[in-house]
Length: 197
Image (cartoon, rainbow, N blue to C red; front, side):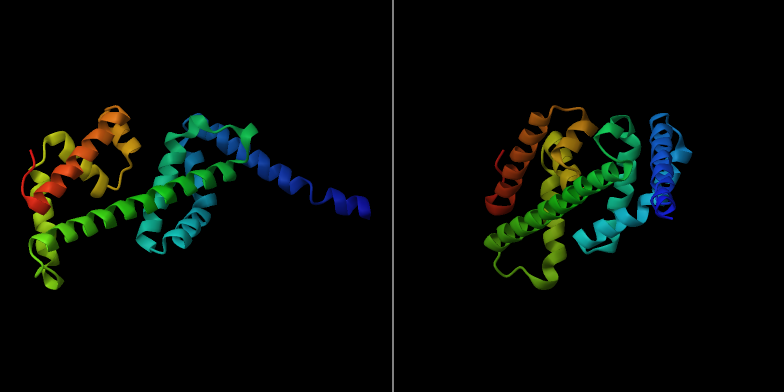
């Protein structure tokens, strides 16, 4: 009886790991059915982790989509000897959550900075004039040189990290950082005390 009890639990984990190995092979081969199976198996876990960390259903859904896009685009980087497929997916999830939190912080900092600059220019601004703030920031952003404008728009409107912007634009990361810094300085100068070209 004790041999049966020790033998019974063994097949389930083996089958499960074989299924993971098969899914990993399918992903590596570019099999979309494997991606669909991975999505169905881990979607709820990914969404739950994102929702708990972000506290926002829409952001959690966005992160969930980004995770599985990351699984697909990064499938060649999965190494089974480094850990289980599920662990790899959770790792991607944690990075995407961190990206979402960083993007949220960047948005909040831009709004706070723009608001403080506008308040310095006109202390009476506030309340219903919030949409005016948005229009002013957008107008000043449009006046920036094209590379700076592109980097700041990708940062604040598409929530991309500087590394993601470098990948999308093909620019070196240092160039992206430089455009972001110069663009923010110009934006701050224009919103605070007039143009600084």
